[in-house]
Image (cartoon, rainbow over all chains, first blue to last red; front, side, top):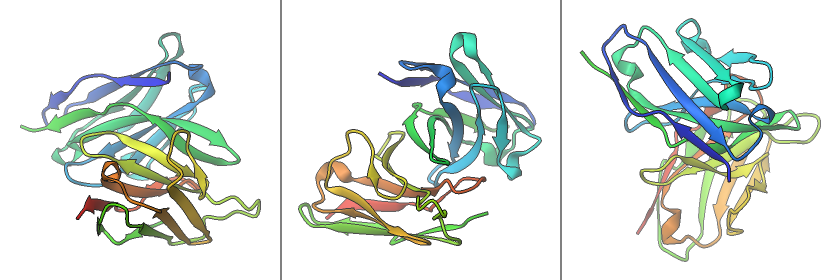
Length: 121
Length: 112
């Protein structure tokens, strides 16, 4: 079955960087893109960006442009999301989600378990 | 950016009764091909979100048929024909017409 397993919780100081991994199994990794979505405590869902697992193309949310980098290691069926210059309002649960890309649309049919990133001095 | 607005934000429902959630977008989510780029997700307490409905009205694999999606243009609705206890959680609509992808604020369904 399709599984996305994320790395464990992180605690970082303001100004530091964090890199979250998302290991996929149960399907052909390069056939589906990966999106990253975050959720601040008690808040809704915020899309961070997308990466093509086929060719590495990316599309980032404008508010995170310049601070976020998404990459993949196809040999390990793993996607990564790095966020730099962390601030307290980056404290959130970060999710990876597999994207089905059909008919010019995309929907997220499988999600990782989430990784809590806490930014605190 | 496309703004997604859900209502109500809180929805208490008696088990066995129907429920309806509205999602409105700041611009049409329907293309000339007729497809509607609107999905629905449910985040149960303590869990990751899960896909319920894609392209406006298509149930995802394994989703009970008491869930249905409808609508067009800028107005969409998620309906639950008979609410069960396991339906508790926060429901989100999401547009995939263009990036940045945006979600509604969420509607919290609770059992009365």
